[in-house]
Image (cartoon, rainbow, N blue to C red):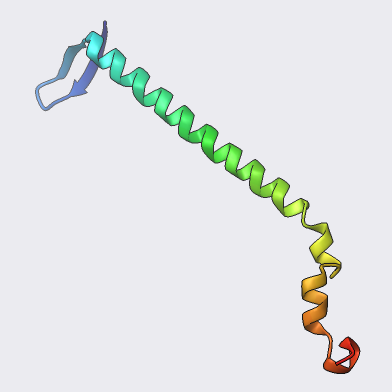
Length: 78
């Protein structure tokens, strides 16, 4: 059990702070939920980072669909 101190016009008010089992459960639930959300964000960030680095083939223009669309009709043999 802890105490809080509040300054008032008449002096310092000291209150006892108590925790029930429900308070402890809610705090544990919120902490676990926050950790799960944080883990999801970290996994998504790592996935996006790895996905960004794996696109080297498209950077060089070696994709057949994009190179064919960029050529003129004479180059395609039409």
